[in-house]
Length: 97
Image (spheres, rainbow, N blue to C red):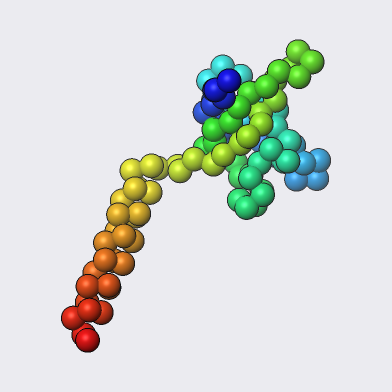
């Protein structure tokens, strides 16, 4: 079965309790910190995320949360720039030999 990801933004997070809510166009969805990627630290207000919505006793919760770039075009431009720098450095190092 293919997982269907939803898109939303962190609306609220309580670090003492370890849970918060993700806002989507349709509704606010509960999430627990254990569903958030540990490598990213704590969730921040307005972070754009994608997640799987699961039903739990008639209520929905977010699982498999992944961060999305706030500005994908800017992120792509940065990746291209970094890649171009590495190629240039490599070519120049060959010239210096």
